[in-house]
Length: 141
Image 1 (cartoon, one colour):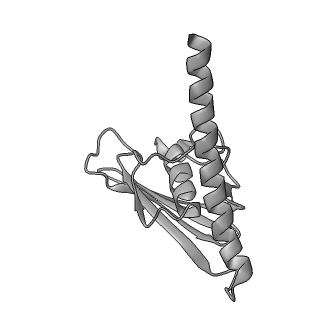
Image 2 (cartoon, one colour):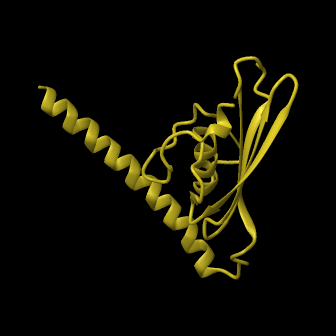
């Protein structure tokens, strides 16, 4: 019985990943077929969150600005009571060149999938390999 449950879960997960990949490829094909500037920013998403235990109100944020090739930047602002830290990380082909925090990874995936401009950390986006591993220190200062 456990094996069947695992198989159903794996099948559902594979279908979800397939749908998301198809959606991303369809968006890329729209660029190839049209007269679009490939360097122009086209996918934008922002996520607000509480990065520090001392601050509530979701004042910290990460903003992804990506072109059709998946290249661009992620800007993150970690806001505390006495200071604010701002980070900029490059994104190439939909992946961070540096390790991305979970929030940064979420906003890049949302932008690439056309789910912006405003997303939540609770939005169900698949983790199918666009992430870069563990959290970056910048998200948990």
